[in-house]
Structure formats: C-alpha cells, structure tokens
Image 1 (tube, rainbow, N blue to C red):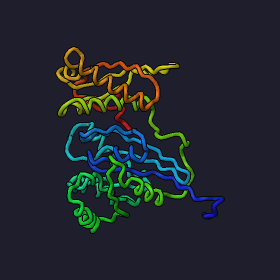
Image 2 (cartoon, helix red, strand yellow):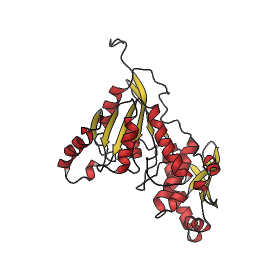
Image 3 (cartoon, rainbow, N blue to C red):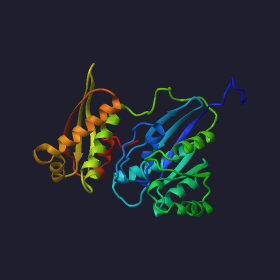
Length: 301
C-alpha cells in the first residue's frame, strides 16, 4: 500500500487482553479507553463476560477484548463458562496481550500454553510495577520469562496510573493489519446500556459485600425505560440462599440502599443523564451451577 500522505496507512484489528484473574486486565482496558467500561474491584474473577472496548484514532481503530481471568479450580458451571470464554477469545485476535502482575504463577503458565497455540503475536505486559519495591528485579524477571517463551515484546506498565499505557498502545497499533475501521467513530463498546447497568450494580456488590458472598450474586435487568429527562431501571439481584438475601438487604434495607445509591451514581456518570434505580433481591438455589440460570442471566456467550 502506498505511504503517500494523500493515502495514509490506516490499521484496524482486534487485541485480546488475557491473563489470570486480578492482574489488571480491566483496569488496562479502561486506561486505553480513557473511560470506565469494564468494572474493576480488588476481588479476583470480577470480569465475567467478554467485554469489547473500541479506541478510534485518525490512523487506527483498535478493538480491545477484555476476558474473564483464566483460572484453575472452580467446578461449577459458571467457572467452566468463564474459562470457556477466556479460551475462545484468543482465536479472534490479531494481537494478544498477556497481562501479569510481576509474579509468575501456575495459572500464568496455563495462559502461556494457550497463547503458544496461537498464530497471532503476543506482547507481555507486566502490570502493577508501581507496587514493586525492587525495580531492579523487573529486567531479570522479563529476561527469565522470555528466555523460553516467544513473546513479541515486553512492556512494564502501571495501568491504574496510566504509566506505560501509551507506549503499549503504540506498539499494538504498529502490529495491526492495514484495514479500514469496522466501527463508527463514536462507538466505544458493542455492549448495550442495559448490560452496562447490570455490571455497575454487580460492581457495587463486589465492592461492598465481604468474603465470598459477591460470587453467589448475579444481576438481571427487568426494566430499562428511557424518558425525556430520566431513565428508569429495575433490576433483580439473584442469590443462592435465604441467608445471603438477608445480608444483601441489610438491617432495615440499609445495605441494599447503599448498593443502589452507589450504582445509580456510577450509571449517571457513565450515561450522562438522571437515573431512577429500583433493586430487588431474590433467591435461586445454586444458580451458579445451573446452565439454564446462566443462560437467563446472560452467561451463554
């Protein structure tokens, strides 16, 4: 293709962010976008879906795919579905980014084995370097990890602060195929506002509920109505036992009110309009091991 300035090169392709849980893939996606798309919490397995985020520039369009963390253990149908999604996405990508957090674990090796079977080039992104006290250990770590693993390049990043993100994006763009954009310039995701509303509620469940309880919750949007000055949303929080329902509701409904208030503010920031949010809590026993329930709650992709 000609490099004449009247016909500048334009690149477009898909980039998959893969790694074990809680290494910062969703934080990295949000940093690329310069906006919050994927929910982020300190708890592993926060991401349960395949999330697409789109970065459009004059010279390129990058379609990022955030994935659930590939993890060991977890015998329920939900865990199997999350791993299935994580394993499928690399087949779609033109470039892969393997995100780790400065420590190589058995689950990282499992991710590498998945990567090694792909034809697409893969960059290693060592994240959370701002939390590593001994910065001199980073280069030896990178050397050790790349000695027998054929990464196309290595980047040291702190996605939470944005450090190294621009350089990583520049490297990714250079590796994409020459092609026209496949999404409109104003699009930043292929997900609906209905889906994003459910995710923002689930984010608050992850942030505000202790220990294992958030993993026993799912969110289903029952009503999403746009009016001229407000959007009215009704959502059900599903749990697996009556005792869990009581915890989510809290004393006199205080916990549920707090979850709803925080989720509503997040929606108003993301959607740019007033939100009226109603929440209910219902019990469906062992939903996380029920294929029909997973399909109902949107975990069938």
